[in-house]
Image (cartoon, rainbow, N blue to C red; front, side):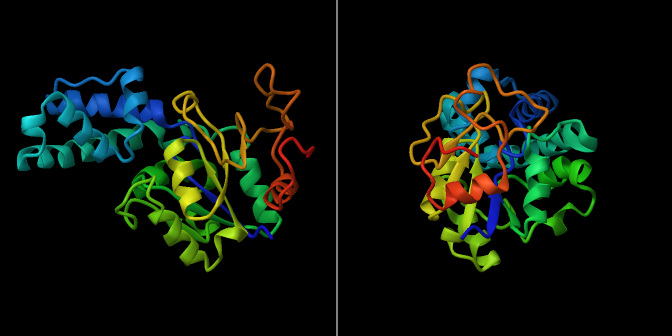
Length: 256
């Protein structure tokens, strides 16, 4: 029986990656680094989970002899802190909306008695900047468990953060459903034993999602039209009733 929904953050609750990329580029400029990540480069770098890890990977690509030095590690820490502050200013106050259907489904799930959780490896500050406006300053009390970069050192596709969240919920994976947008996220959730619903973004649409419970363009709202060609194959919006049926084993394509 479905008892809890566990949400990833970046790309899943909101399409944050453009804001992250722009924030990285602004931080690079402020720090005097001659780096600039265009969209194609950033999409490739998204295969590396974690902002600091992404920077380290890029550094190893462009300057391998320097990348593993203590100076490089210190620079990554400093520039990532700058990037986090820039990102917070870009998304705080509701400047970046949640993806279609997210807020509606969160409210519906709480009303239906489902517990909510977050399993991400982004920083606590990034989560707060994103959710403080749409869910209120006390957004955290709406979630029975929050796993993030402060608790999980190992990034997705490692399932560490999901294991921590399941332990905090005191629920088996079989009683929960995960929401992800990327291959790394799906692999992490699957490794933790979770059925997973995937809503890709433009940054992750090329990923493989074998093993996902469903792959949908978004969660949908009654007033939000689906992209062309989708209406014939997908329900107009994802409901708690649909999640319960899918989680219980309804075949792909079963009506909502």
